[in-house]
Length: 222
Image (cartoon, helix red, strand yellow):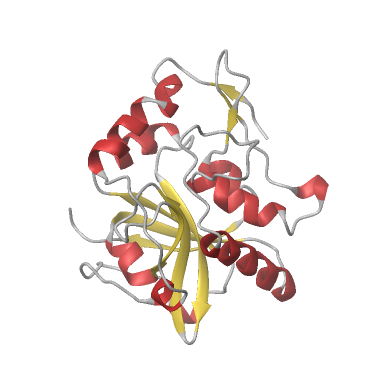
């Protein structure tokens, strides 16, 4: 994977971006029952929906969200500057959901959460679905690992410390779940170096490198 250093603007990733997130979102979390995790909330109708008959649990979905924080992450979270956030697709009792990590999400939950696919897509300007080479058994383990993080109420990693799995930021969460399944030599590695910190961040590019794009489309208007 290509290594790159953080520019002056991107160096503020851990601070300036958090300023946006803390000001745009509430910072409290609350306990929820397991069933409540799967209660769908749709905020609007997206222009396009992923083709449900082509999806597999364990696929990765990227999106560009609305708002200032999403625009900031779009500029610094990937090299092609197309998306700002990522999650794992999961089918439960015939419905599609996205497992992803948010800072004080709209559900009032901080860290890994479960959101209905339509709601996730409606909260985007655009989205794309990518597929790894994991087999069916590996995908089951991947999704169980992702669900366990939700049930354990792991919080959002505001320090963006990729070496600490007790807290997880969005791309770190997806990488953590995959790395529990992948052999050591194939694991996802963070490639974005933060100058003078010794830290590396997981780019969205790191997550989907080598994956196949399955579909892409537009979300809901801002």
